[in-house]
View 1 (cartoon, helix red, strand yellow):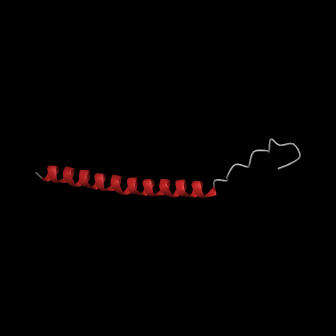
View 2 (cartoon, rainbow, N blue to C red):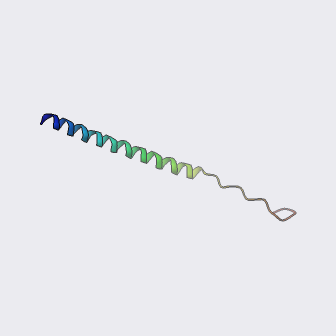
View 3 (cartoon, rainbow, N blue to C red):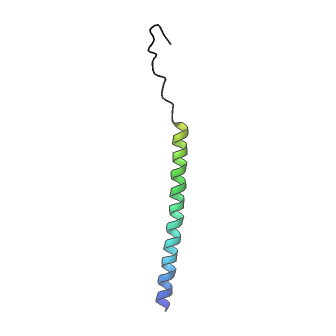
Length: 54
């Protein structure tokens, strides 16, 4: 009985730790995605086909 309780508590602690780490990874990934989207530079305008300038 005592061994079963130890196993269950260890399993619960492992699941809790996994969920905490997973949440941090998801938040960090979302922050990096937002930062990359904010820093994305628009492509330059294509050159004009008309002779003599824009």
